[in-house]
Amino acid sequence: NQALNQVLEGLANDSIEVVDLTQVLNEDTPVIQLPEPFVNTSSFKSTQISKYDATGPVCYWNDLTLGEHCGTHFDAPNHWISGKENDSVDKIPAKRLIGEARVINIKAKSEENPDYCLTVEDIREYEAGYGEIPKDSWVLLYTGWSEYVNGDKFFNIDENGLSHTPGFTPEASKLLVERDILGVGVETVGTDAGIAHTFNPPFPSHHFMHEANKYGLAQLTNLDKLPPKGAILIAAPLKIEHGSGSPMRAIALV
Amino acid sequence: NQALNQVLEGLANDSIEVVDLTQVLNEDTPVIQLPEPFVNTSSFKSTQISKYDATGPVCYWNDLTLGEHCGTHFDAPNHWISGKENDSVDKIPAKRLIGEARVINIKAKSEENPDYCLTVEDIREYEAGYGEIPKDSWVLLYTGWSEYVNGDKFFNIDENGLSHTPGFTPEASKLLVERDILGVGVETVGTDAGIAHTFNPPFPSHHFMHEANKYGLAQLTNLDKLPPKGAILIAAPLKIEHGSGSPMRAIALV
Ligand SMILES: Nc1ccccc1C(=O)C(=O)O
Ligand SMILES: Nc1ccccc1C(=O)C(=O)O
Image (cartoon, rainbow over all chains, first blue to last red; front, side, top):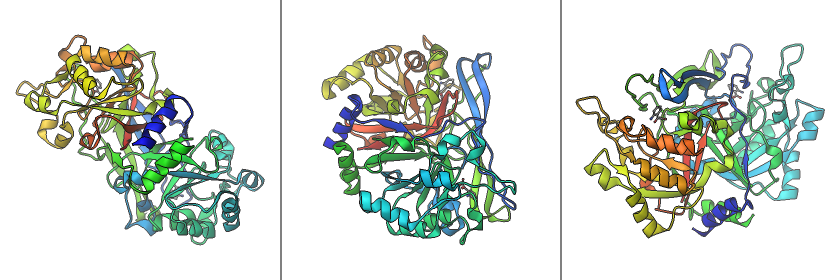
């Protein structure tokens, strides 16, 4: 295939760049902190098996504990009650993990108002500049939030214990479902705003995306290294049987 | 980028196919069984957090336990004592996860002799047909072993407790290092033959590849759906800090 040969050439001569959209996984990797009655997920933990020693003279390796929604991760449709009859992470065709990245920049708006949620007008403005969002693309919300990953601003919790981080309005999520995208990607801990449990419906991005058998990508980084259109994003969750999602590697070709 | 646009078009019109090289992860996923004094790795375990119930009214999710070398997985150079100063899995540039797949077929030979190891002659014969193995390619050993994943033949253990599965001769591994490939990929539980602990050096594929800062891919499937050359393989391990490897998603564009 000629296109594939050209990609191999482009990688070899650096005219195609590979951007790693993945945060490092370690014991400091943040996991979502949901209010009661929710039980929360495990954070990442690594336990050494052997390190060139008596229990493994030639090798080093570890065992891991982590949640399906820990670190840079993938939300499958069955993660949400509205998508409970839709695909688990192992059932998603590999083809539907790969698509064009469409990056919408709401960094300035999110800096001014950390509760900022993408609106239908933001989408129309993006489309006026870059064309209608195509079917089977990944829509990425660039907020700048990945810079805060190890600081207080990542959760941005107020004196009442509420988290203030950006997300999607219900109307924007509905329009993206109409566009028939693969799913949405964000830099924040999850695909909904920090206060989205107070929205109607609660967690509208999860609700509308997963209801339509679409996916979510959370805790991405390096979105500032992507153009507004034209990059290829490969989302690579583990193939966990019946899984609701998975920690993943996310990579873009630019 | 024109090549990237052509790939997006090819995906949309099905002239490019996406082949999933990943085995499903579940509690039956086999993990390597090493002889004493080795301590072995954990197998995969999933523990439900919530399922649209009191502890998570709107969501379903699980916590996981698994080894870095469980299921379809990636071996980083620091997995082996010969590569202990080389890269951990999080330090590998994303660009080095993507390369041309070069598939060498030793299925008939492995069926006849389950201890069969790839030879220098096999590589020369492949190269006579398909050209010299290029720098930064993935060399995949097609043995047919993925079909056995949930049966006794996967480990193929004899009456003395020895496992008989195919792998690489030390000389073949050295030649592949000379070719400056990204690494090797196999369908078996690890990148060395079942009896490779008796070889000189022990586990030669691990020894020579990781010494040269090269990688291993284990427990792949669907290699029969790849051409001998020209497919693009994307190996996507988790970005585990200091990790010796990772369960992964492996995907090919054909
Ligand atoms: N918002 C949520 C509510 C309940 C469970 C998980 C989430 C996530 O965002 C997640 O998938 O990380
Ligand atoms: N051969 C081995 C010896 C010791 C530890 C691990 C291995 C593997 O193959 C592996 O990485 O699955």
